[in-house]
Length: 258
Image (cartoon, rainbow, N blue to C red; front, side, top):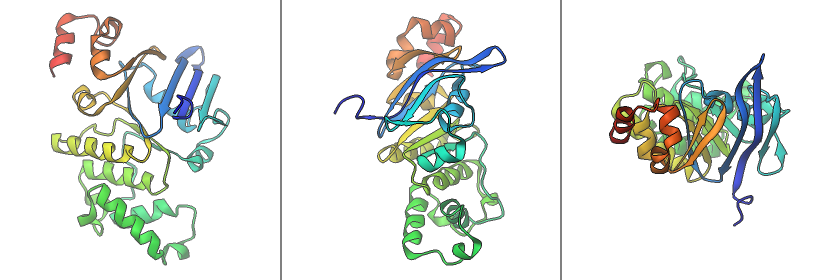
């Protein structure tokens, strides 16, 4: 398979200019089908803004974003991009606290449908809901109100809600922030399972989490692509050590052994 045939989402020289400040600066990016990619870098590197570009929340000043190799996303809005098959999860979970876990999934699946339609969810929809509940590990809490879930469980529920729309690409912003160690491990395992059927981009600051679950890492610095490769390759790179760790040898060692 050629590189292009295996590409689901790409950007070419994407720039985001906020009144003279380039939050993203000629960023090149390529995501393969079925890939779990981690996007890392120091604070202010442009990681979240890059996700915002990919999902349509922010419109690039320059450059091009292609989905499935031919669909230009640059001039489309968030809703159009979501319908095409790109789901975005922000850092804070946005679930409906007064609804049950199951009701949240139903609402996500039929968010454009009428209330009357929601009251008669079809048998095939029930099967999809059951499958998602099992995938996110909340099958035993389907009738629990979302507001009663732990922080990690709320994050898993929102991931499940995104999956109800059957996206080809899922964009996640710091999904394990605030989680316990056990929840963090379960989240990594969940992302690996999801990546078997779709592509995932994860912005993350927890380097131990990245080391354990990343197959490929993209490092950004000052809005640009700095380095791409395995976590081991990224850790050995002198430029990454300089900009990501301040060039301090003791920090580099701590990062390598954390």
